[in-house]
Length: 68
Image (tube, rainbow, N blue to C red; front, side):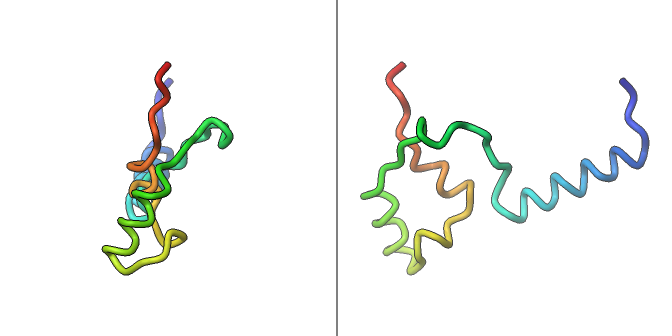
């Protein structure tokens, strides 16, 4: 499949917007994701921010990996 110049321009715009917003959204089922809340709270306290202000990239760094 060949992409048109317009498609490439739109893709670049999406990539740039996602980068500015902190990354792409993962479409995983939320019930499968577990976060290390203690580490999130410490990180936010150290940075002087609220957890709601974390970027997606920052939040993803606190995902607890499944042993599977």
